Image (cartoon, rainbow, N blue to C red; front, side, top):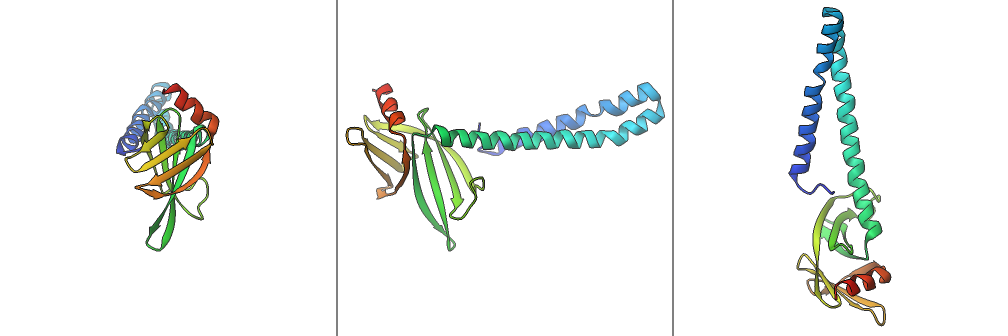
Length: 177
């Protein structure tokens, strides 16, 4: 699952608050076992344990997000790329269309690392006719399965096709006939 809006970050924040509340048990347990000395040690240990657990939660959320993006890259049947000129900087928007009718759109700088994303969004892939796909009412990809050719456009302007997995494309269109 890719975090797309503020609700994912709100859930992450609420989980961190639940961890902080749950670690209140540590000083209480210390007080029950050793009295005031246990309470003092528990109060000293509680923020350390809460910090470590919150850090583990944040790192695992980031790793899950990165794995989800990588799975979209691996499962994509076609990827197209548009170029965006923004404030003198060239950005690439790459659209990865998957057979499960989901499209990952990512924006990254031309010289960016593979894990350095500016923006990530999910869109639905809509089959237009028997050999065409549309994303966000602007990206249109038409396939010719007989000659293994494809034409991609962004609002009517031709765009680059990064790669096509013809076996996945053929299976997708056979499934949706």
